[in-house]
Image (tube, rainbow, N blue to C red; front, side, top):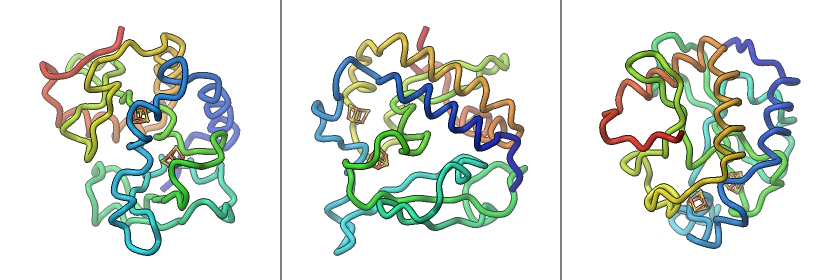
Length: 188
Ligand code: SF4
Ligand code: SF4
């Protein structure tokens, strides 16, 4: 599937997000880095089972020879993706969670626990990732902890740029349409 987001843009996005964190300090200490390690114990001798879908075009940032990542893909027609999507979606698993080269971790790892949401009136807003969509409990999301304003701002900036790509817009809208807005926690 074609992406209008270039490798250069993804790298600029990664650089922007390298400079921010959800809170001041390592939030992994609050939860044992559960968003990286959830299910790792059940993954058999490989020691991992959680994975991350890359956004369209995000694979361009990687060489696919990274020894800390295992690559696979899903045919989008066989999974839960927007109708406009075609071809494949890349899926990566990190082999040594919660350790990874921080500056090259995928985008979805960088923006959590925020998620982009397109409201009924068509506005892009950042929300706390709804708990029902998670197989683990994130203390930041559950407690509605105050997040770093720089992190919220950078994440908002990034998603504003990303949804200029039609397929990414469709994905964000697709996910948003399943949510009950009354139950969401919106960031300012
Ligand atoms: S984002 Fe949430 S679940 Fe992930 S490490 Fe931080 S506190 Fe834990
Ligand atoms: S790539 Fe890094 S940040 Fe993302 S889940 Fe794996 S260990 Fe965690």
